[in-house]
Image 1 (cartoon, helix red, strand yellow):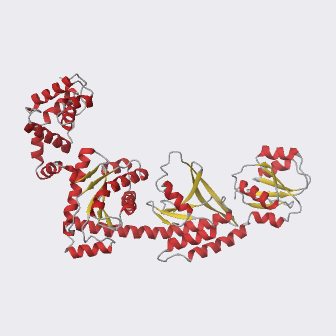
Image 2 (tube, helix red, strand yellow):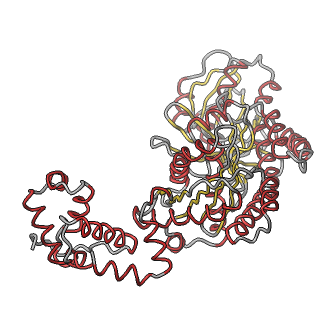
Image 3 (cartoon, rainbow, N blue to C red):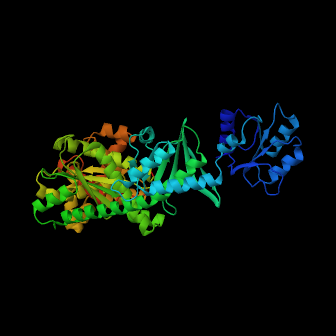
Length: 558
């Protein structure tokens, strides 16, 4: 208990008067009654005195011994110089009527022996909830009852796995708070303070992190030492932690660490099984369709009416790992977080889905469900992609994810092809749009035809690019002109010179001049439909090959 809470309880329960506040956040170790012998006061203990000879020298001696506060049992008002001296020394000065029994004063701060008995009892009670099928939930409910406060457990990848019926859970979900990834609320600030309870042979302590968002405060404790296994949110809206609460939280963290470790092993095993399923599906090693459907049902999804395939891929994963210099355990944690982000957002929109990790991406199969049929699945898939990207951005701000969406496969035997289509959409989207792309197979148009050629015969695409747009890209790169951008804008605007000039902030004569320069470089005339088609395909080949103009010298159009 800190000094501020102690003085508040003295005033409320015993009618005490606090004349000098001292250091409100200073932690107290107990209450010591003056008895005139050496060593009667230990550091952190409140001194209870009743002698008439209290003066500045005696107060200074108490402060030097580590005393945070003096409680003087006296009738009437004490001398003003006593109060001033205590205030200058940074001590609390409290008066209390002599009629108040010392026993009631000592009950405000439980002694070390009381804390030790409480510690043994709490440890035994919480240990009795270890090992069941719902041990984390049972343990949390028991600890919440002992504290008389709401508790919510968050695992290491941001799932809130206990405390759903509490007001604390509702508030955390409403604001999207996660201890595993930061608040995402710009005005939020945080601080950490250790809270203590004194035992005969030392102290128990728990680290409490405080987040303040506007007028609201939220508190949580990491579970685990070197690498958190999870986080324990605790409701402190009814008052600060007492030493008894610290004891309960100490044992709750300790027991939860073991239970969450087992939960992590379970999650890793489950993801491994799901990953094996996706590997077999993609490679076509699943045996018969019946076996495929049985395995999917075992994992909780009904794919008998087909599914939509979606791939979530970490952009430039190798460079991200090189930049962050992550160890293997951190890499696996990163992949688990991505898989959990996809699962959390998917269940908001769909009830029949199956996901599994594969390399640096997550594959999701969405079947028709009670929330909508095939059309609903196809329509809401881009929304899911956006949700996952937004969630990952809050989880890991310097990491981006691209998404590829295939066509809905009505027949389960076509699921491998559905995955291939999602993979094509993902690759094309990343090449054309860059990081954080969301691309559907149906929306790739002729890109997918060129991409197939690129996969089967890369030199064919290279040759076509050199014969069409290659000279224009080289010219822009050398002279810093805008021929490629002008051509793209012109074709996008259905060969309208006026619209193109307006969009690129140039005169119509400038647009015509640039188009004429393109004809001289390529031999292709934008006024001829066949040549215009070749230039359009040349632009797409350029984008797939990643051959955009480099920034050249800034000269006038040549």
